[in-house]
Length: 85
Image (cartoon, rainbow, N blue to C red; front, side, top):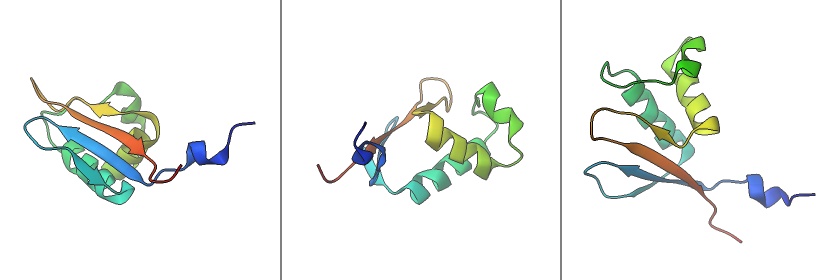
């Protein structure tokens, strides 16, 4: 049986083109994703079209993805981190 700590998260390391890496809480990252999802130049995965709002799309991204295509030669990636062993 897997240890329950494997499913805990304390935050995210966020990598974005032309930016330094950032540590963000889930709420901060979700807000950042929502802002990107509202931009026309961002290509959202087809799977996200089933959700009615950018907030629901962002939550699905947090739960199931680790990157978002935000334009030509740009990237947004995030990785879950735990602060305890």
